Amino acid sequence: MNRREQMIDVAERILEREGPDAVTMRRVADELRIQAPSLYKHISGKAEIETALQQRALERLGAALAAAGSDLATLAAAYRRWALAHPRLYELSARHSLDRSRLASGVEAAAAAPLLEITGGNVAAARALWGVAHGLVDLELANRFPPDADLDAAWEHAVSAFAIYCTPRPDGAALVERGSG
Amino acid sequence: MNRREQMIDVAERILEREGPDAVTMRRVADELRIQAPSLYKHISGKAEIETALQQRALERLGAALAAAGSDLATLAAAYRRWALAHPRLYELSARHSLDRSRLASGVEAAAAAPLLEITGGNVAAARALWGVAHGLVDLELANRFPPDADLDAAWEHAVSAFAIYCTPRPDGAALVERGSG
DNA sequence: TTGACGTGGCTAACGTTGTTAGCCTACGGT
DNA sequence: ACCGTAGGCTAACAACGTTAGCCACGTCAA
Image: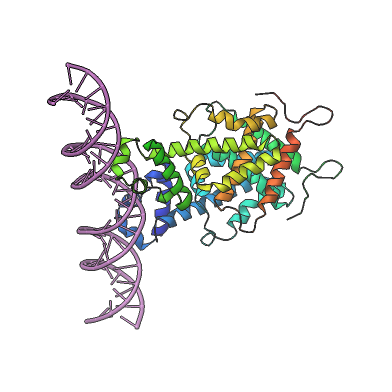
């Protein structure tokens, strides 16, 4: 098994169990029964670990969304559920500015596909949709809502607003232009 | 003038000009022509500086929103404009988990007021609205959209979706229940 | 006037972080 | 038999946040 992958596995485990501050080069090395400088034989630096974890997060979130189907409500629920189940990983992937050169191609597109289906191919509307989902999750993870806030209700409103906006009406007209790019 | 406030002023300036990594205790001390340990005569630690900056950000963003009026489109534009004008400050205030005990009371409520006006007092819907705004801004600041993405269009869709959802229709009916809390 | 004391500087130092330099050993191929 | 590379190791560095402890100055009471 690849040492590099072992390192990233270990880093992920530490991240989820003990938070980002616990993810130290020495700590990762310890877990591998190795000295910290030896890590650099396999990796350029800590940033590379973080990029790798970011990529993992995108892939898995994308997979979770793809598995959730194409209904807006269930898709939103899947987004939130995945983020709350892997909060540190989600935070890392969202906060750390994206380095597209290192990112495997297609990962982004795959993650975006389910959203695009809902907006009928309208990518600007899909981005707005992504915005709500990410925003609500991010604020929740950052403790920005009062402890007694009913976030289920907030999600329902968000979903309703976009459902009304994106769903074609019986007469065939749609509020959002479908198929536009 | 208060040394504590000087410290926070300096920290803010460094943050906006050179990014979060440049905000060091020693750096702040240097700017004040003082040695780093002396900072601790006025402040408990770096966390207190960050909390203070977070509070500043919330107050100013709140003020910017209040000044923008109560129209959804202009409000959204004001939110985005402020965040893009003070990206580091916004990031700091959004990422750093909120310590309500230290936060001046009323700051949160004041920032939320303009949103509540739009949703007719429905706080869950206001949170959804906050979600889109924060989400779109946060993704933009984190470089998560492709460089050529038309973010103006994304914002327009978001605004349209919520405008339709929140505006009472001519017959007096509204999609969102107004006055609920 | 003198003494006590709080305010706000200072230097020295500690522990932890990411990272580099340089050495050594084992193994695989020519 | 040799040589190079892969992958460990120790020692060390600079920078970080922070603590301990010393000292000068101003203020106020006796």
